[in-house]
Length: 127
Image (cartoon, rainbow, N blue to C red):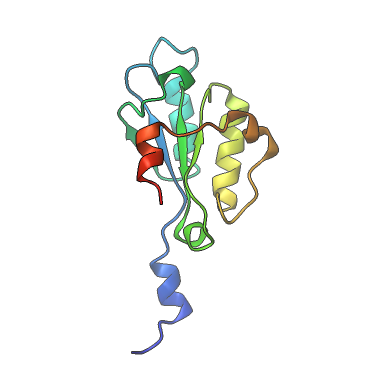
């Protein structure tokens, strides 16, 4: 079987992605903030998937940072962030994913304060 070139591997590389909860609590008037601006700011940094409820409503707004294929190869898992209602936190997330995200770039120290555990049903599915 022929080896793939570095260019072919790079073409197949999947970038860091973001999942943003926008359902019953996250992204609604129940949580203060400009939710459209938050989504736009994050979308400028990485692909964003809008999700229905992620079952951690007490942590609204929730953002899940999905590692790139390079990050996954390095052993990174998705990073769940809660109470992401501050523009500075959004800027830190955007900067981190532009730098490569989980497994590639160190997480900004400030985001340690936003890290949450995923809901039990998600934890049960993880290896």
